[in-house]
Length: 264
Image 1: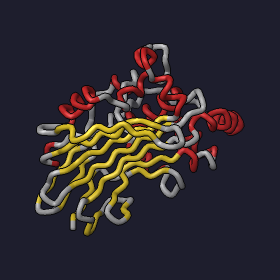
Image 2: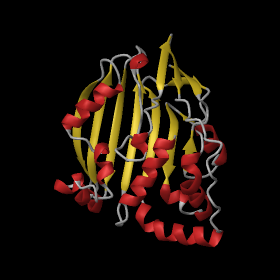
Image 3: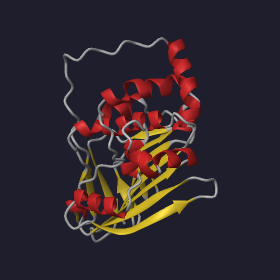
Image 4: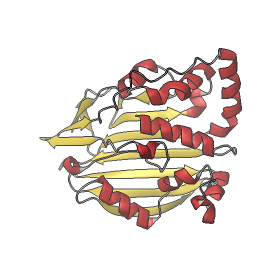
């Protein structure tokens, strides 16, 4: 969970120019235990320009850490090897939308979901890269999929607590960030290719289980919630994030370490 919130912080810094950033990961599981993983990243025109040419490799470029989320074919092949045994790149598509946004959609073929080790929304954020990979894992048997979230990093009881930011100061910071993160969204979903018969996951809608979804436009309607998320999110466990922001329009987080999905 900390890696995801570190990525949110990285994206917010990269969006110092008014821009747009959207990342979506969808794991679709078939009845035979095979699966696909679709990762789509869309960038606004300004952010695309920041990542173009030599600028993407410039350590002084705040957007450089996001380049891994817009992989070329070679990088996609490397990621396939990281995802688990037998995973291959099924397709690599350049995406261009009428509103000027563009990016990449990569689809990975997974022959056996049991061998998938999935860390969604990965980037080369210097801070998050210090953390060891803690991927989601899956067990599929008899039409039932068990999704296991990684263990949270143990908290340091001696770590100093962050000072509480006054509400007025927080409101001012949120107002300043509003144009930077407008249109920003990050989503991780799980789908049943033939549908879902039942699930004990928290956020289920039809054939889709939402593991993580943050819509910044909706969060910005409540500055105090947005500020609290940016201030404390990376210090909370997955369960704590889910509980703290339960019922808040614009954010969904699966709080259970393990949940089951029965496919139709």
